[in-house]
Image 1 (tube, rainbow, N blue to C red):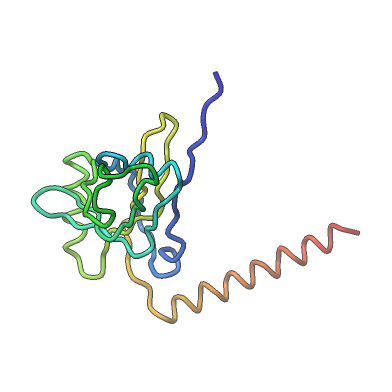
Image 2: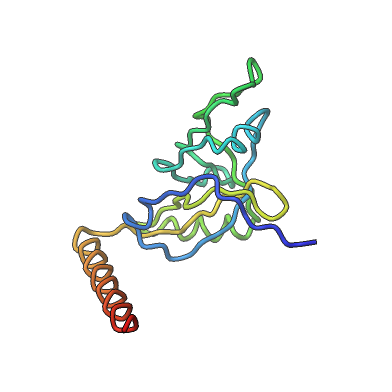
Amino acid sequence: MPKRERKLIARNRSARHEYFVDETFEAGIELRGTEVRSLRERACQITDAFCLIRGGQCWLHGVHLHPYSHGNIWNVDPDRKRRLLLHRRQIDYLDGKLRAKGMALIPLELYFNEQNRVKLLIGLCRGKKLYDKRADMARRDVDREIRRAIKEKNRY
């Protein structure tokens, strides 16, 4: 049987622009009711989301899962906080790292993995300064010019 690929639901495109991603972790997400069906419709927004560790558990705040179109009264609050499923050692490690100044847990991608389970890729991030963003844009432009020149040279 062929191996399934992961199906992307939502990506936080601004996260890599705003932050340096030091480490990434894959976390499960605790969902209720019709939320998985809603995610199958690709109805999710994670751009303003963030994660906090409170009471020994990791919580996801600011994610908006649109209500399921056929959910009626079984739809839950689309903006509620959701618990992330991580191992105890991972939570303790992240809690220690987050106590350092300037560190944040930012969701990067929400997707269905190979077993059709909803997973969230979270990044342990440091905030970028304006000059860092400018340097990244300049480096991207230079890389683009180099690729363009190589492509032009190989064309003839």
